[in-house]
Image (cartoon, rainbow, N blue to C red; front, side, top):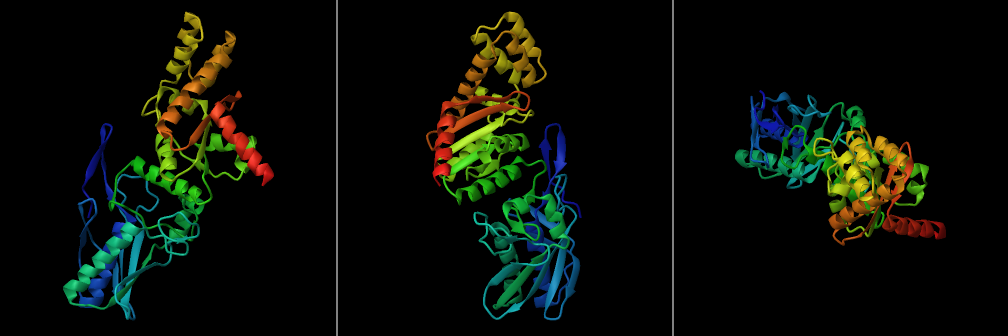
Length: 382
């Protein structure tokens, strides 16, 4: 049965889905009910943490030798989710120890690095799904009058292969997928899911010290490698377009020194105070070049051409025609530095580096140079 909840995204209405955590809790309740009462439920339902009720038809509901098993098929709605359509299976059996124990089986990953939601060695079933699973099984136990313990094992057949398309290998989750969800609901095109992933990586980086490099993506990673900045023992976290969120997360995790390095095409927007650099949020790259060029003495004709430029590299080429590249880029770097300092709000020292794939390094703020010099010195002495 389709999950008929929708959210608006721009001019479209997109259907929501439900998380692997919701699937696991539903499956666990179905298996527990079959085991304790003999009832093979035709439908399973629960109220998610978001307050929305999810009702599904179970698949593979059966008794096993000493327990029961139930599967629920994941429905991600209109979200581009690698787990969409997969079966999430719960196997349950009675336990001598009171309480509900929860573990992962086939296709559920294991945590291998600190800083994640679960400790090293545990199944990658996050705490909210664990609470949902436990509550669902406890409700069945209470209805059936059973006061003993229950062992629950969550599996996702095919999860190990599918996990290669996720961040799990990078995050240190081996052997399968994670059972996730804080609201129990998948909201299509959710930016929060990306921010949550960045938060995990920043939290993991904090396990190694109080120094951090942020960069939007692959261009930044290549730049850092080419200049030896990825070899200073400082963790690098890719923050996509979510610059402001990443800076906030660095403060929350107690970092002392942060360098933000990125392509001019994204980070020039910081000079205008834009902290989400996705083009759907805002652009104004050419406008910023034009404004700073005007202050530096650019002709009216140059300003007009800057406003019509297609790329930031094209803007730089135009500036060079009037020998204004250096002062304008210095001005933009200083403006971007002021904005990231404002966002950091004194929580840590921060510096910014701007570069272009065509022109190389374009701007290094004095703050970034001082931080990197310190890192190089410490790395050399170490």
